[in-house]
Length: 479
Ligand SMILES: Cc1ncc(COP(=O)(O)O)c(C=O)c1O
Image 1 (cartoon, rainbow, N blue to C red):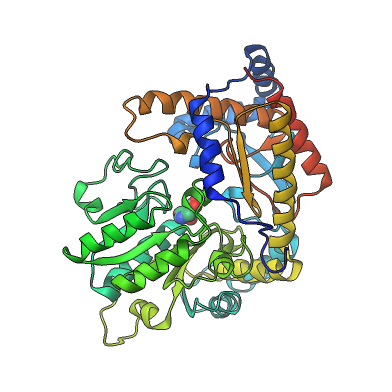
Image 2 (cartoon, rainbow, N blue to C red):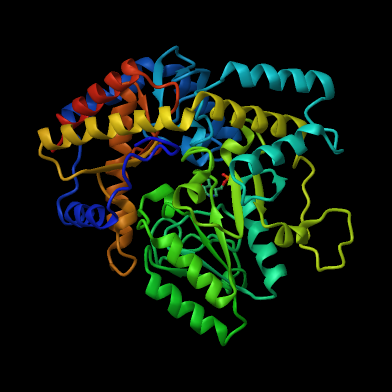
């Protein structure tokens, strides 16, 4: 069952959709005021050091914290130590870490065998020189070893950049313009891709500061809408054509809107029919969903693959694009290949530190069978949370694809863009999720924004028990 990939069974997307529609018509669950008071007092009493630091940071850092995922209610925690399955804040409190820095630390935090190798490389040649380093080659070879459809790989500094580069390459190679994405998906924050983020059909809702022209050639289909994809591809034929279809192969937002098992295969067929490139955004899934990534699991060959996160092993500058040799040649740096070149740069792209970290992390992930171990942990946790949902008779929905686990208590991404009350409903649901996340944190569990969990190889019986106890405490305090 767990032969090569950590997916015990691909969840049925239509069952999840059905459960989600029930959740969306139910009331929004909140935490009882007396319980919320207790959770707040945890933050006030036990996290004074974090509060002080974040208050001071508000003077120098917009909002007091740099990273979107660190904006947690009631205030962000300042982390001092990270080790294995745990994080420790500046006040010495311990948390089970299911945020995993947004996904890259599949081996657990601060995994020593990788850290030691990285330190060796920095000592030897510094984190960056701007010139070629052996680990750039080793990383590209290793990615190709496990994901053979990535024949060539170009290192970049983030997933955002990698998505930008992938669509630039697609346009250079095909000579076409339109880029089709799936509504709700996040492909980084570049001008062209801040379009229908989180909630399908919200289009430019979050595109402040981005001129309309920038998103003029970005289009969307609804999740799993193959008929919609065909229609759009047909329309585009009359208007400059489609350069690329950009997908998270497990569905938008790491599968928050889960892809049907056969969606990618059908998208591949349509791309072939219309001469568009199929681009898989595997920023989250590469090496987490198994060594072959989601493309290996689904056995669907993309033309281009976008990398981030694990590709630098949890170290800085995590990004890259890979794919067919002929297409990737559009990126040839410094060499005139006699074809139009997709211009790409980056002072810190492909530095020895990131490439060595990525290379050693990927090899360790393969050696230790980390995707399978983390995936089994995801299965155990998912089953445990499901039992609690039933015990407390709640409409919440939980599912996992290996080490990527979703638990929906308010279904923000399932709101309809057509609902005239969307802004109000979004606010209420966001508060409910924020409270839920805070209650889990007060119980020693850090999640991704109160609705997602990435399990790791470092999780164990103790962390699973702590987590289920925390969920039970919160579930028993809802109204
Ligand atoms: C699917 C996907 N694509 C792209 C990105 C952007 O990557 P980065 O944060 O490295 O810019 C993310 C980030 O979470 C992501 O989840």
